[in-house]
Length: 384
Ligand code: NDP
Ligand code: MG
Image 1 (cartoon, rainbow, N blue to C red):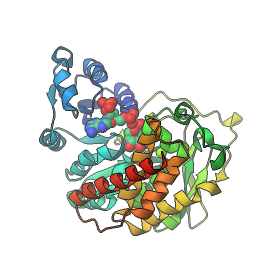
Image 2 (cartoon, rainbow, N blue to C red):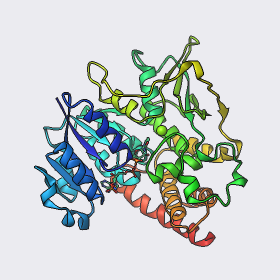
Image 3 (cartoon, helix red, strand yellow):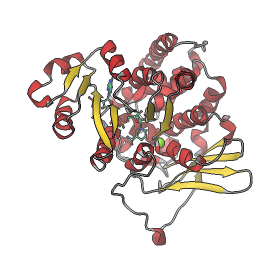
Image 4 (cartoon, rainbow, N blue to C red):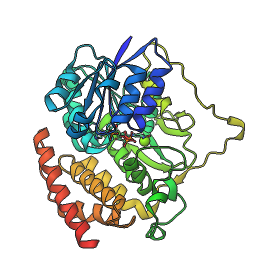
């Protein structure tokens, strides 16, 4: 039996993880969960899965949590409780599924434990990839990606001695809800349209990132760190059906891909498997009716891709600036302060104006994040 700590249990990835655990109760136990505010969902989870611990980040929600519905769980709050929980010896697997930069704190601690991390929170790698990967290497922590593209690459590399024989990796992008639209047609799209992903049902931040294609750029940076390969090895390709999640081409001419219908439970189940694959209900691919297509990453979003490639090459503060600019821009769009296409303006201008600096520890990441958010907010103010 593996004991699981699920960070961000009340979110979209959290729900997919719970479904996989529910289908494999004889192998997987939900030992502890974390969340920010959604205490009614936490109560539901507690009734069904009886975790031992519930960490509630938001203090107000923590004090409001109904102790009668918590089942056997001990409820906790505050940084030291979080750190003690992550280091709890009973935990085998930590699933990092908090949304955005808020996921960094727990992921950075988890990287020091020597346990296994299943990683969905790409923002922690974009902002702190070097530090997290080096903590993981020195503590013996294993990181298995559950972002579908990265999990696909992980599966395609299985059995290989190293990445030395890889000649190219294609990361596929669905293209999001505005697949056939040029950037100048997107000025007046609404929040509702932007949040409506054609293939995946996800949290609001990543849904907007998919609509702008920022998500794919963050994933390029995530892949560079997780697989320790130069950005030149990665190509971003639009694949509207979201059936092939990534393709690895080897130097002998073989290309290996991983396929499934779009359902996050598939990569999660793979990452949670131990000696054998887990058994889950899934929607089979109908191969006889399959029509797969692939298009170049749109030319009018190349500037975004180039910024991501620059981040891969420069490291240090560049990923923090890109991530903060994007989080401020997405939040401002969701609060009707800027239009959809102004998200790009906020990213480009903040990336241009915020000075780069060397980053050697987690504290300097938090400082740079605050500075970059201030710069991004200035840009929002100047254009809204
Ligand atoms: P959601 O917005 O659906 O869920 C976010 C979760 O994080 C919620 O449980 C939320 O709690 C919790 N949370 C937010 N802030 C904190 C905090 N400070 N401390 C503890 N918990 C916190 O996000 P998604 O599930 O869509 O995405 C999660 C991560 O996975 C993101 O990094 C995303 O990029 C990545 N990912 C998501 C995919 C998807 O299909 N959704 C696919 C691939 C990657 P509360 O509910 O209480 O607010
Ligand atoms: Mg993805």
